Amino acid sequence: MCSDVSVPGLYKMRTFSGLTGFPAAVLRAWERRYDFLKPMRGSGGHRLYTEADRRVLDSVRELMEQGRSIGEVALLGRDVLLDQAGDRSNPGSGPEVFRWREQFLQGALMLDRNAMCQALEKAFLSCTPDTVVDEFMIPVVIEIGTLWERGECSVASEHMASALITQRIQKLVHSFSQATNGPKVIVACFPEEQHELGILVLTYRLSCQGYQVCYLGSSLPFVDLRIALEQLRPMSCYLSATRPKVFQSCRNDLLKLVGEWGGEVKFFIGGRGVGGDLEDLMQLGVNTDGVCKTG
Image (cartoon, rainbow, N blue to C red; front, side, top):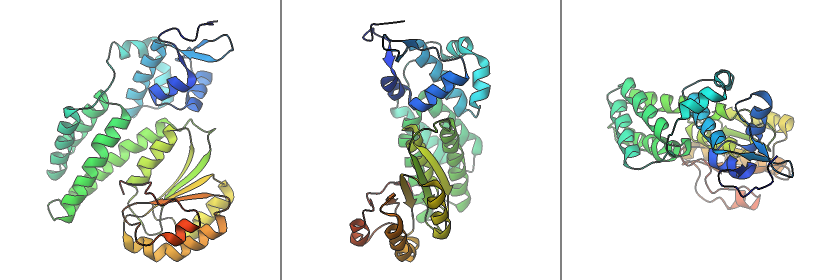
């Protein structure tokens, strides 16, 4: 047992979770079920993670982002995961992200799926997932949407790009599915709202923070949202609308819903469609700061 928690290269749970991006609940679950994490113990019995543990998780993340399940990754064992980690430096960002983003965009315009996949792979191999999401995925989706609105990008190109990015974000979300002990939240789109990329990004970020996310997807009728609220009793509910018409058509029903549940559930609304005079919603305690900025 180690008594010196200030030894360089040793990290307490909170610090280690922040460094690796894996919630504490996930780390504890993996330690119980698998043998690739081997934290030391401090004098008070708390976990102390090493640089080797960090490198193991670098390999775990990379393999899961390639579509491997945590069960498959665990079968490789700690030694193999360490070998795969090698001496990789900390992932970063920079001009490379811009270059790969441009490659993805050009691939989308040419309907070249291989070029798009290669750009995504290069980004994930060299950058943290947060960097890829913030500096690659979100900007490229916004740019493709802008080109489509100007008539410079086909619907086929937009659909292909959105589908690929949606699939990769879903994999990221799945990699945090072990986090089941955090506060429960609901994430969904407004009724008749089909664009779910924004709430997928939000789901990923909330999952990274250890929340237990109940993802209910696109076009969720409020009658079904009421059922979910009754059954799940979440701490918060996040709703997204990308079209003003959708938001305005649902406004009265939203006010009624918040009036019924606002005392128990905190509501957040966001997306490009949310706008206008929101004073009545804000008075009911709805957070309108825009939680789904990609949508």
